[in-house]
Image (cartoon, rainbow, N blue to C red; front, side, top):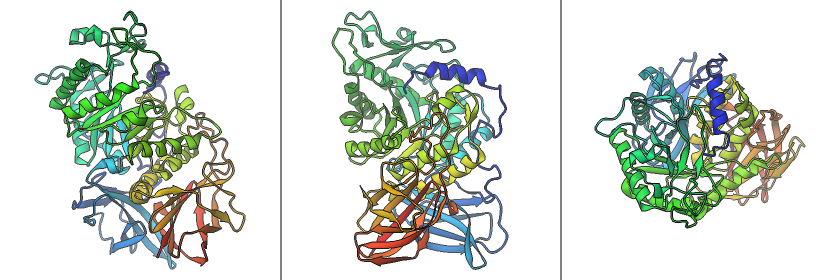
Length: 587
């Protein structure tokens, strides 16, 4: 976590809390706001192979409605809809995504009423989709379930518990034999043991992993009372007179002082602290945080310390102590990622993105994802990329829907996931900050975007090689360029598999800027492009062409007519709002 604006964000969030009663409400996010008439849901965010899926919907549509089950564009089965709840047994294959939709036929035309994705994966690390929690006050089971039901609807399979702990150097309040029922977090908020455990239990019921957050090297000003030794700290001078620390004023209860992860004693100490946590709470793992580069540092004896180089030993120690528990470590601005975190026993790679140039910002996102894939031999990437950052730091308001969807389209098309959803949507590195709310149009879109990345995970995040697709417009409706984006044009991202090509069309028409963060919330809605005649260079004889978009027909795929002459096909792209995915299947 980069904490340069931590204090201001916290104080602002606290000072504004309760001052404005916006609609829709800030906490929690809900998607049942009247914008979607048919709401499908499943009982879990992900399923083990062989596990039955329980589906339900809020309203039973009138007329003859069919349930359709698909893997990519292949229809597995269809059955009439006869009630508001039913079960489905997916194929036993591991690591597969499916789309389930409800459709009817009107005037000979198929009309999709709603859809939902299903992920069948024995290990969530294959397709990580992260969410977060940040508030642990006294909550009822109903309140907890409301938050977790929303994360479940977005297929969140990892939940990270931010700012849940008692102290950085002593995360468990009390002892394993006598844990506290209530404790104060770093900013003196009440945290309830019943709420933390209630969230963990609710997550497990829904097939989610729960990861507790903590720094790899943090201690508060009373750490000596808890057994932290003076020679464990990091210093800004060779004479151990000036500890490195992150300053936190009121209402925080202490500054955060940095310890040395290179020391076996510190690692052993934290192993024991984490063991205490696991004795009391049924967490599934540890979300390890850092503060990025800290400049020149020294140990107690005056030796220079390469902070990033200490990370692998720390991760290794945590894994050896609890080999069945998951580990993830934040690479702040990629600090420590290459050759260090990336090759350590973490479930996936996690990057907090701080580089956000206005002219080529989206290529920053794609570069991080492809670098991480290369450095880790194929581990998946989750980006903590805070949207509308300046807007969210200034006060109450709303997320800018075009900015959020353009960032998500880019992240997902390149195979990444976006940490953004919890009790609210993230806007700054201080996770409890709920200054910005989601409008109904964004809530609706986010459900479909998460269905899309889950249902088509085998194209988006499961192999293939990126390539420069040769695509041109035949009717002048699109000006097309290969990635990276150009303002007022359509950017393509190609991905090649043995038997298919996938081409993503990303719409940057009307783009005010190319800053992925859309910091001030000024990004504009792209022009809707319909029935665009398109020519594509292919690698062989195409047997079918199909298309899907999170912006159309609830993400449900449809087959397209095409013609082929030599190594080119001609096809009409039905629509392009933010993101459309076209797939060419080969004989």
